[in-house]
Image: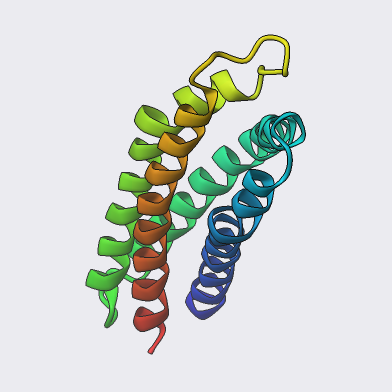
Length: 148
């Protein structure tokens, strides 16, 4: 049963990493390359869509990793799993303090009501997001290493 939990957890976290990596290095560059109104509307729509899904995914991933750490407490690799959990906690805290406030503003913007500094706010979100992606990649890497 522990093996199944380890695999499911690793897959769930890995897919989350893939989505966030894709946002950072595929979707945002595409949105930033299209004309202002369309790009800004795309950012707003992405903020609404992913803003609804990702909190559940982040918390669900953290819960799965915590259950793995508890269930496998006396097994090899538990230190890696606990460290991965700490990194996922860091990613949630980063999200709540740095990214969500910008996203909550962004998802309501239209070409008619966006602030003058909307591009700077999007770039700030992207910088924080790059750091968050690095953090969750590190967590995922630790989980993969713990499988060995």
